Image (cartoon, rainbow, N blue to C red):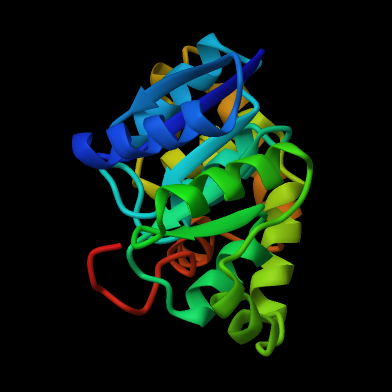
Length: 218
């Protein structure tokens, strides 16, 4: 049985994705979430999710931060990015950060179903016209390096890093994650070492680099 998670804050678009998923995969169980916190809750309660269809812009997730969070905390789950913003550089960055494919919100139900099937078969998928333009762009060494550094973090370290990015102090992080403060300190030390940063400010700069320059609704 295939298990999918649709992550989008627009109910109508979630419904369209659900229909395409049900038409593309037999015996499919589809879960939904409207924000990043909901996505993480579903993945925590259902570790057998095979594929997440992830909107790049929804509550708790701006730019590539949601994608990076999923790749950091659930590296075994495939992610198909879904966005109305299909500028080739954005797509290139999403792929560099571990997306298995990219679905423009203008895609037809047939294209969405095809994308889902390709990724579930362990392939990658881009719309044909967009694929050529993305292929012409070189991978950004900065994004490749950042993705590699983030991949060195454990799931718990990534949770700590995300809370550091929110400006939380060690004690607040300990309370949020229900762990001891000295454990948080140990995680912070390991995070700084693995990311090659010296302090919280530099770690925050790295996280902000996941933002997308274009501010349009994604």
